[in-house]
Length: 340
Image (tube, rainbow, N blue to C red; front, side, top):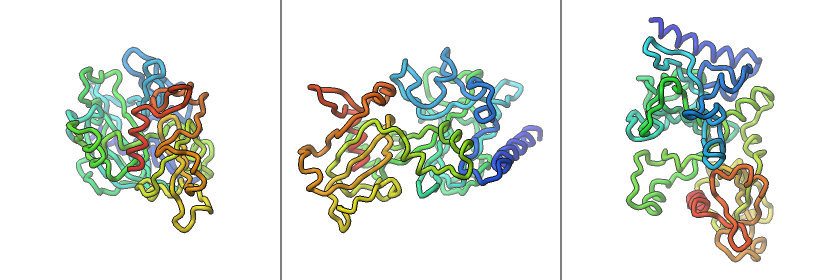
């Protein structure tokens, strides 16, 4: 009874957070921990990796001296039971529907987790809630969820050799774009013999945005916040030309495609794709054959923001070979999957 009351109060707290600022929020905090928005220091909101400072629980090139990416936020626990286990309610960050539930922690280093689809500003976004101890019994794939609805209870499940300790119990929270509907086919073709236990919801098929940046910008801009503008204003790390014109990402994320009058009427023969450091496509521009006739390659790196690459190298998408920027194997696989 007591724990249920706590869950109800936490859900009410999320509702208050959405209403107290006088506008309908696009995103709500996924737990009752509000330290991100009210101040008090990052160590009140984030959990670092074992023996590391709290910043290693934030998004980006924050691990292994900047060479390992962390694609979400590790959010600190507030509620514990008598055994010291986390009991924080986990809330849906926005209205949406459940697309995937992994209830078998042995199948993922995310342990038990949920993925929810959202449609925001014409952008299809996917939120991930990981390391859960319990998933709401009513949830099924296809279940609608409302912003602030309790969908799970925080935990520390995973299949990693080193278990998440009680003191590091947290919610791992992500906001992602989906790369390709045909991921299972691409995976089988390009990674033969490797297991794919999660179909299209494999982590390779999700490219993350920084939830902290989104939540803070929304908090600052209020009703003027736009997810599409937020994505389009990301710093470009590189621009790549691909001689492919019919791939699922173009239809799913049509709002990120910049109009080129020269290609109207089906005259596109290639696309320029602008990527941020994490490999997130932030702009796609169709090009005619005449516009790209000086580029012989099927896939070519057109330009690189070397300062951004130096600042955020952790995705290892680019390298210099013979004094020229080229895609690494990882970068080539990303572009191939994106345009498959």
